[in-house]
Length: 338
Image (cartoon, rainbow, N blue to C red; front, top):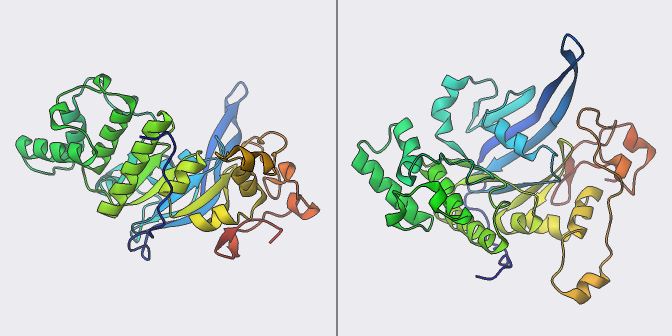
C-alpha cells in the first residue's frame, strides 16, 4: 500500500437528513484548586459553548490544535465527563443529566474507539474475550458458542483472520490492535461511533489502511460517527462535514469540500495553509500563513473572540464581543469579518 492517503470519496452520506445527535451550548469546565485549604480558585474552560449536530450515516470531523477540547467533547457526548452547562440530545432523548444506570442501555448505541490501541485493550484478555465482553455485558448472542461466532464474524469484518481469535494484544501490530478496538466497538451494533484520534499513533501507511476501513464500514453499516483528529488529510478523506475547534469553541462548520476550497475563519485558513503539497513547485509558490504567538490558557481565555490575539485581521470589536456561530455560504462561521 502507498504511504499517501487515497483521494477522498465524494460519495454523500447515506440518509444524512435525520439528526441522531444534537449538542447545544455544551460547556465542560474543570475546577482548579489552590491555597492551604485547597479552595476552588478558578476553572479550566476545556469546552465552552459548543453546538453541532450529527446526522444519520454521516461522519463529522472535529479538528483543531492539541488541547482545544476535541477529545473532551467526545467524552462528554458519551457522558463520561460531567456536563457543566448545555444539552446533549441523542436520538430525541436528552441524556445531559443521565446517571450511570440510565446511560447503560444507551451506551450500547454509542461506542468509542480510543487513540492508543494498546492502552485501551486489556493485556490479560484474548481477542475473543475483548471483543466478546460487550456482548456478554449487554446479554447479546446468548451462549458462548454464539458469541464466539459473532467475534469471528467481527474479526473478518475488520480484516483479521479467524485463527487470531485466541491471541493476546501484545501479539499484534499497532494497526491490528486498532482493528481489534474497532471490532469491539462494533460488536453491539452501535448507532454512533466516536473515534478519538484513532490513527494518530500508527505509521502513515497503516493509517491509510485503517482510514479506508472506517470508510468501508460506514458505507456498509451506515453508522454515524464523530472523527476527532488533528491530521487534516485524514479528516478530509473520512468526513462529510468538518467542525474546526479553537480553545474550547467551534469557529467554523462546513461541508468537507466547502471548507477545503473556501475556508472563511482566519484560523481555518491558517490550518489549511499548513497542509503540505506533494508537488515541490506548487509548495514553493504557495503563500504560507503563520499563526503568531502561543495558544492562550483555557483557564484565562481572552475576552471576545478567543483567536483575536493571534489573528492578522483582528479589529477592536474582536477583543470586546464574542462572535456568534452563524450561517454563511455553505456553512457556519464565528467571526466578526462576516
